[in-house]
Image (cartoon, rainbow, N blue to C red):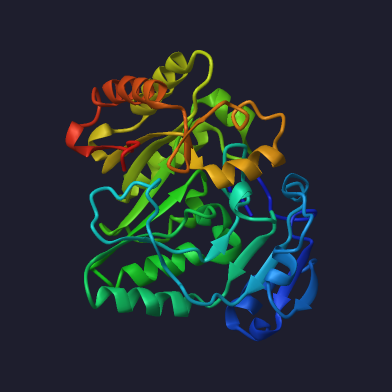
Length: 341
């Protein structure tokens, strides 16, 4: 796999657990063919492996395995309050993969899941059917890459291509593909669609290097963004989550100037701004997993079950960054997450 120079070979995915019910599924065979040296272990249910007790998430991140499974209902979920809906009334998300190849210190997945192994649901057709049922009632805005990074995995899974094909035949469906990947090769053979949004999360260089392990550097992401824009894709930029640390103003000002000096701002669909926030229940687990992380051990405020920096710090970060971004992007195209959402 070639996504920013990181490969998904041994010790990554050296073992693949396969639910008995999906061992003959065409997608299972297709995925297994991508890992010819992996050991196959058949199981009854993915939770037998994924939900085992006393797992060490951080340790598993160094050598994660794959679990191929059948997704059961619900296939789609209503969007969470901590996520931005970009003005869409019917906001949903779907998880065709659980867990991510990347290892960002602030990622909520380590608080949400007991395991760092990746679960791949092979029955995309059932998810598609559920989305079609929703579309019978109203237009749908669907985020498909919250609990993983599908573009980073595309060379092995092909799920971006499948979703792109699906949304191309459903004009009342809008899909957002959130990513930190620089895997433009996977996009090159896809046709741009107005209802298929590529959304890149961007962070300052020092935060990426120290906290977003295995991810492409900012300049690699920007190169991929420029290529996608040149082809005509609808591109969203996400300065979200913003991470508070010493000299944060300098870091974010430098990053934003770098971003808009290298790409055409008038071709950007919109921009998302938001400070780091996470469920208090997830945070408790995250702190157990990363006792030495400055980001995770920060004394966050807990408001209604959501941990964040507090009103003063949050407003200062948003206001400062907003004023920088509006120098390049029309204010009507800047979306801000607020604590009251």
